[in-house]
Structure formats: structure tokens, C-alpha cells
Amino acid sequence: MNMAASWRQNAEYWKQLPALSTARFMAAVFCLIASFSFIWGTVFGASLTSNACFAGVNGFAATLWVVTGTRRMFNAMGIVGCLQAAANIWLVAALTKGRSIHAVPFGAFEHYALVNAAIASVLIGAGYWLFLHSFITEGRRYFDTLTEIRLAGAIHRSLVPEIKAAVNSFEFYGCSWPSGEVSGDLVDFVQRDRGWFAYVADVSGHGVPAGVLMTMVKSAARTWLAAVGPCGFLPALNQVLLPLSAPNMYLTLAFLSYTQGKMELATAGHVPVLHFDRLASTVSERWVSNLPIALLSDAQFEVSEMSSGPGDVFVFLTDGITEVVDDHDRDLGLEPLKSVLIENAGAPLPELARRLRDRAFQHGKQTDDQTLLLIRHSRAI
Image (cartoon, rainbow, N blue to C red; front, side, top):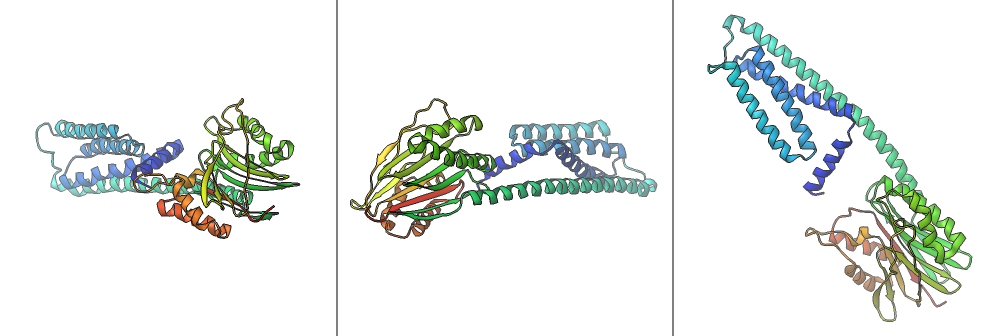
């Protein structure tokens, strides 16, 4: 994660922090910084009034530094710095009135130092307690949330298991690798009476919101596939998911079906499917120009007929693989994956999947959910 992304993530965390936790943390910062005024005031022999004034100004300024810094308000940070400097200069002028800071008489210094030490100790103790209380409270909230996310992750893994299957003349292998605990990607395989139906789907975004919609996709997909078949699958899924999706969420999907010798392919805003032709030893991109699902209620969806022969391989993947970026912000794209497919088309499907993903890792780090579905036409029908 680069520095800019880290800053944005930290800013989002502070924006979502409960108001009481924020106030408690700010009070801790105030107490800690204010204590320094009494410590240094003792060194320079400033009066208790001076120490209290500087403590108030610099403690309040410290809280403003935290607010502006954690929210990436860089211009405001500069303003806070200027106001803090101006306030300190004004206090020095107002409290000394052109003279040096009034020195405490030597006889009263011991009592004066004890008072300053007591005030500083109380402020430090209060700051420590407030910091500790903030960390404990937020730690509990974090671990409660983490437990729920891990539970959601376990549910996701049960809904999107590794696929290893063989039906008649076809072999299947599918796997999904979340970028976090919960994924918005889905790979599924359904064996039907006279054939099969396999698809990959990718909910926009990632994390818990995408994972929740993904669970609805799998349930709706299996229900409507049984009711309307491959040709009516995308329109039915669109009508079901449209009212259930947030305005900024949608679904891309690609499927391949085989029924009574008829093979059909469709993509809905999804990454093109790679088709390795064994006879020609070439890889072509297969897609149908459809909109993503859950964008428009009146969207029209088309399905394209496909053909394949023994040794052909179909590769379905999500953009978490193709959009991996290198150090120069360049996407991986499909071309490097085509080369890997040509070189390893005859390998066992799990091995081919591993090499495709390794190629993505060579290009850059995983930042999004990654999913692969491989289908091989293993022998003549």
C-alpha cells in the first residue's frame, strides 16, 4: 500500500470513529500536551497563570492538529500552525508586557514547583487514562467487528468452494481468492439434466457489502436458472437484483452452458472469456456486448452460440487479475495470460490456474478479489 492510499484509509477510519471515542481521544491529547506547559514553566519560573494560559492554547492547538491531520486537511493544518504561533507570541507579550517573565521568589519556589508538578502529573495521568480507555473501547469494537467479518468470511468460503468436476466430455476447475476476509467474486458450476452451466460473477467493490450481494446472486442464479434456462437467465437475474442493489453497486457476469449438444456463452460487462483453440494453437477473446446486471431495469441481454473441440480450454477470470498493476501503474491485461494459456493448455487445470495466478503475482500485488474458472473440452463428444 502506497503512502497516499494509507492516508486515505486512515482518514476514513477517523471519519467513522464514534463521536464519544473521538472526544475521549482529543481530551487525552489535550491533557498530554498541556502538561508540558507546566513542566517547562517550572524550568523558566513562569507564573501559574502563564502556565495555565500556554497549556490551554497549546493543548487546544494539539487537538486541532489531530483533527486536521487525520482527515488530510493539509491547508487547515497550516492555518492551525500559524494561529498557534501567533497565540503564543501574543501570550508572551501580554503576560510579560515587554519585561522578562516574572521569576518566582526563591523561598516560594519549592511550593511553586510542587504545585506545577502536581498539575502536570494530574494532566499526564488523565491523558494516560483517556488514551487507555480509548484504546480498550476501540479494541473491543474492532475485535467484535473482526469476529463478524471472519464469520462472514467462513460463510463466503462455504458458498464459494473450490470446484473440481468432470461431466461427460468436459473438465472444470474454479477457485476464488478474496483480497480480504469477504469477497464479492463468485464462481459456480451447476450440473443439469442434459448438460451443465458454469459462470463467474463479480460484484462491484469488495468487502462485506459486495459479499452480501454475492450471496444473493448465488441463490437467485440457481433459482432462475432452473426456471428459465440459459437464454432467460441474465434478464431474470437483472430484474431480481436491481431492487436489492445499492445505487452504486452492480454485477458483471460471464457464463458458458452446454445443453443437448448446444453450447452458449454470454458476458454482461465482464472481462472477455479466453478460448484456447487446440487445433490452431491460438487464444481468442470471446464476449457479448451486454450491460452489467442491476444497472437498468429495461436492459436487453444477448447470448452467443459457441463451438469447441477436444483440447480446447475456456478461461473465465475477474478483473482482480487483469487489473493488477506494476510499479509504474500499468495493468497486467489479457495478453500475458494468453501466453501462459498457450504454453500450459495441456497441463492439469489446477496447475494451469496456479500458473495464471503466478503470472499476475509477477506483475504486481493483489489488491482486489481474484477468481478463475477453467473449462476443458477433454475429448470428442
